[in-house]
Length: 77
View (cartoon, rainbow, N blue to C red):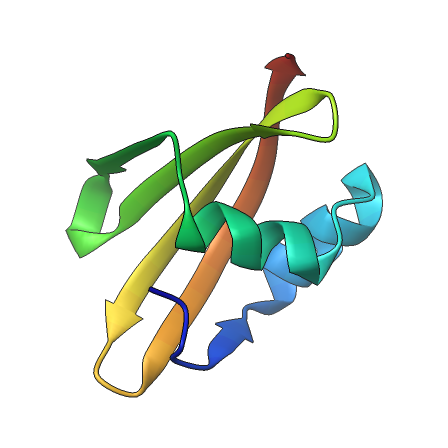
C-alpha cells in the first residue's frame, strides 16, 4: 500500500516527536493496519498495535501519495 510517497503535516511531525513515534512505524501502520476506517472530511484512520501501544494514523490518500494529518497513541497495547 505505501509504495506512494508519504508527506507529513507540521502537526503530525510534532505529534510524532512528542510521542516518540518514528516515520517507519507510521509507514508500517499504513501498509498493514489492523483497522482502517473512514474519518471526517474524507480522511481515513489506520490503527495498529506496534511497539507496545496502539497508534492511530489519520491521513488523506491522494493520487501522488499519502498526507499524514496526525498521529495519535491510543493506549498501551
